Structure formats: C-alpha cells, structure tokens
Image 1 (cartoon, rainbow, N blue to C red):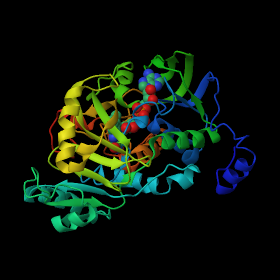
Image 2 (cartoon, protein in one colour):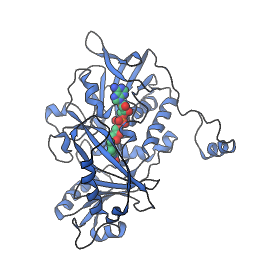
Image 3 (tube, rainbow, N blue to C red):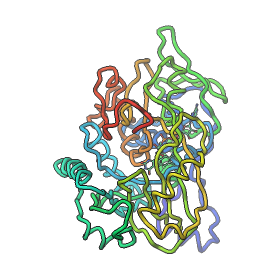
Image 4 (cartoon, helix red, strand yellow):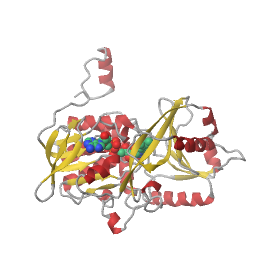
Length: 419
Ligand SMILES: Cc1cc2nc3c(=O)[nH]c(=O)nc-3n(C[C@H](O)[C@H](O)[C@H](O)COP(=O)(O)OP(=O)(O)OC[C@H]3O[C@@H](n4cnc5c(N)ncnc54)[C@H](O)[C@@H]3O)c2cc1C
C-alpha cells in the first residue's frame, strides 16, 4: 500500500496520476472471524482500526449494509469539541479530541482536522452563569475554554447582530479554542484504509439480518444477506439502527430513533472562520472549505427511520440563523439532508458489553457522535478486546438507566427527543 506523502503525490503526478493503489480491498466474507463489527460508519471502522492497531486483533470483519461512511458519518455537520461537564462524558470526549489532534498523521490520511474554535453565544446573565459553570468544570479537568464578554465577541465575530433592536442581544460567548471541524468522509476513508492495511475485511452491501446463538443463548455469529458468518464476538455500531440490531438479540434499549437535518448554502467568499452556536435557539453554523455555509439545528421532533426531513424545521431554523447573522438573508441555500439519530433517555452514549454473551453495544450517539468517532472506536476496541471497559467509557453503560444513574448533560430529563 502506498504511503501517502508529498513525495508520492509528486511522483504519481509526474506519471499522470496512474498506478495509485486501491485504498482498501473488496474481499468476500470468510466463514468465521474473531470479531465482527456491524456498521461501516466512522465508529465501526475506528473500532476495527484500533482492534488491529492497539490490540493486535486482525481477524476482524466490518459488515456494512450500504457503502462505507454512507450513514450519519457522511451526513453530519462535522463539529468536533470536548466541552462536556458531566463526570463520565468529560474525560471521554477529551480523549476523543486528543485523538483528533494526531489523527491525520496516525492514519497517514488527511482527515482535514481544523481547530478553528467554537463560540457558544449567550444572551443573558443567567445563561452566562450556566456556561461559566460548564467551562470552569472543563478547565479544572485541564480542558481549554474561555468566557468572552460582548466587546470581545464583537471583535472576533463582527457580523453578528449587535444592533440596539436585536431580538436576542449578544451578551457574550463561551469558547473552546481546540474545537473545530474535520472532513467527515475522509475520517471514514482514513480509518477504512488503516484497518484494511492491518488485515481487517471491509464488506459492503452486507446487511446483518439476525444473530446465530448457541444453546446458552450467546451470540456466536451473524446472519447476513451474504450468508451466515461465525464470530467469537459481535459488536454493533449502527447509530440510528441500534434499537433494531439490539431487538434482534431480544434487547429492548432505552433508545428512540429520530430525524435530524443539516443544510448547506451556495458557496460564498470566506465569512465564518470558526463554529458558532446560537444561544437563544438551536442553530449552529460553520463554513466548509468549498465555501458553503453549513448549518443545523434541532431534531424534526418525531420518531422516524427516514433519512430526509420536513419543511417545518427549515421554517423554524432559517429565522434563527438570520437573527444571529443578519447577512445570511442574502444567501440561497442549496441542499438539505437528514440522518437517523439514536437518542437515549439521557442524551449520552452507550459503549459496553451487552447482557447477551458475545454481543457488544456502541450506540446512543444522539446528534453528537461525530466528534466522538476516534474516542468511541478506541474505547469500544478496548472493551471488546479485554471484556471490560476502559476508564474513559466506564460510566457509559447500559445498566445506568436501570440504576437511575443518568448522564444528562442538558438537564432535559428522560425524554429522548429533548436532548
Ligand atoms: C444532520 C446531522 C448533523 C450532525 N452533526 C454532528 C456534529 O456536528 N458533530 C457531531 O459530533 N455529531 C454530529 N452528528 C451525529 C453524528 O453524525 C453521528 O452520531 C455519528 O456519525 C454516528 O456514527 P456511526 O459510525 O455510529 O454511525 P453511521 O455513520 O450512521 O454508521 C452506521 C452504519 O451502520 C450501517 N447499518 C445499519 N444497520 C445495519 C445492518 N443491519 N447491517 C449492516 N450495517 C448496518 C448503516 O448503513 C451505517 O453506515 C450529526 C448527525 C446528523 C444526521
């Protein structure tokens, strides 16, 4: 496999860009593997990569019903950050952000990680108190974060609405300097290439339709549209389909599948060189390298497995954007799309062994799982390899819901659609 470097790019360019290796193989499924990961999104691919790299487990297959990265990994707004304050989330997301920092080099694949900062706007003194508490907790855990007053925000984000009649006056902002964005497809492709190079079989167009069980009920393989495959361990990393894959094993998870949309405008000259979230509603925005303004907001508000949204959210979201950045009213927006969110009762994820022997669960990412991709794969691989969680995911268990130990970052209560 070619090592990607400026030299290889130069040398191949001289040869008319012919002779590049395929980034990964297209193998037929084998009869048996040590580990099968269901779901070829970022989390599944990262898990396979770290199983091989960190634990030397290479007899692994990733089974994907469509194409690699075609789920939420390829549909999200690519924001990465670690501004979490609940014990159980804080160090997990910080581990993930640290992995993002060295990811392109580690994978030898440009994941286009850009630490362009995030600004969380607040619009009242009480909102500022809330953010100050969150950012103080982060800082006491060694995570970067700062609070800016209105004048400081005016200097760095001059295009917001600071007029005396602004509907939601900007009071200040909380900012995490190391937060930013990454290129979603490149993350999936980089992990895929890295896993394939270490011997992992990436099998596309292979839907898992059920499990093989032994006499004790343990999962010992999967049934797929390309035949039965045995495995000592099966991990599911299927995001919006987590409840369905768990149900096939008789598990009823505290997860609902909801719809989330994202939007992109026509390409525009550089305007927003950071990530901004609106504090008076649910709206956030950044600008892609191609110039499109990428923005998103809240869930559509009903349970669904559809990967497309409805107009009412567009109607709700665009005024929020315009209230924050008035010049957005001059833009045309180009595309909208949707993904299926695996919303848990407390808004936090699950990475653990399941109550069924041989089956491991990675899910409940809600709408914040892209930033978790490296950390999630790293912790899930550790959990599968050692049959116990790493300290970073030790609180992200399924039984926390039975024990009443919620990790509710938002304080929204036990309603999946509210997180
Ligand atoms: C519009 C939108 C905006 C978002 N914005 C952000 C953001 O800014 N920051 C952030 O951190 N997160 C964001 N997210 C959330 C983030 O995208 C997800 O949490 C994350 O990508 C989940 O990754 P994954 O690998 O678990 O899932 P996916 O990428 O969805 O991968 C799961 C895969 O499993 C496959 N699969 C399902 N069922 C089966 C089966 N039976 N057999 C085989 N394969 C199967 C699917 O085809 C899919 O490819 C956003 C999501 C959306 C939709």
